[in-house]
Length: 290
Image (cartoon, rainbow, N blue to C red; front, side, top):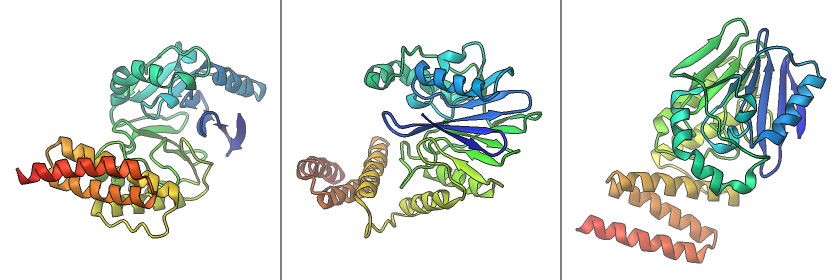
């Protein structure tokens, strides 16, 4: 666990196993805010000990879940007697996906995990005036994604809405996602914290993620100069949106995404995957002719 003091009252905790993930704590005037709870009770015990050793204790704790992905809330059980805050869709998605995630990602558990869902829900935003901490709905990475802004330290926590090098598209909500990133740029933030990146002291990653999304929405992505990782993420995004469009009966639009995805697999020399995807493309073309 890596610890980092942020501003006058923030603490950033970064974990590298099984992949880089962050937790952020705000020592507010009246409350201690814990933003996301990682993968279980074991790392939470380390975080709480660190906070206590550094004089951060004695106030009510409020937990915030930025979205429903399992790696952001499996430590909730340590705060059953505290307010656990999230967007109203977050609890719905946890109820739908939680049990399956426990089985699918069992190797990622840090201690014995008991699913503990949010207890206080909001639709648009919730502000703790005395602490000057704001939580608000920012759909993007997921439909329930929400962010936190500490008005004192000017720290913007964005969950998984911002990722390096490109954002991951989980649902076909590009217009909402773009709107969210544009809103971030209006914030008077000095520090940006995302779920899986290092602390940022500028808006550079927000701007590059926004540029990617705007070009993706227009079908105007130029892959020249893409790294292998960029190609892999772009491939995932293409197939995700293509699948969504296909399910909705927008077959011709879906075809364009699958064709570009096949081109990327060829660039990555993924022969077997190319053949599989081309088989899918052939079926879609047949659908269009019928």
